Length: 282
Image: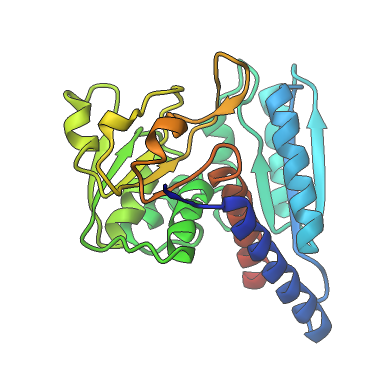
């Protein structure tokens, strides 16, 4: 049976360490706590849940935090004014616009307005480019969480065949870049990849971020592979699940992440690390 990569446990330990560091620096010469501002437009139920989780994380880490709630019919100008107000506020270390935005608002245009030094989600083109060339200020939270979890469990990447499923700008592309930077040999697969099984069966480390429940079955996985499930889906029974058929794949894998409790908590912990980094650089 595979070792379960317990992201919830590791994330909890990371947040404890962040809290210790914040308390130590405040006792030294830092005048204020790290501060994260979250902009939530509309009433998307999933977004509401995610934001509440970030609020709890900030409290656990000793950060100050505010959630700016705007109605779903908020116009482009109002949202831009809100972002720019936070950009200009020296007491704000990190700015996060919760996605998705309501229809009619250009998500990437809004994200590009956030100052790169406060872009703790690492969505700004400048920060994305720095990740690509290996000189990051911030690292995207989900891929960073995957790499940290592998590190915490002593799983080597160098020289391994790594397969990433999904080529999104938020997860898939930066995930491939981070694995490459760690000296993995990386294949980035997507919806147009032919004979997908030929790639997955050769993977020492398989990271799936597609968003399709049950996509990865045992016959697609190499014996003793490390399987990282980034996706968050609803199964036919309404329960949360990932891309991986956990029940069939777990006996074959050497390590595997659960859903929930795997990469989700790590993503949020890495956001807290990014806010801490922004605060320290202030």
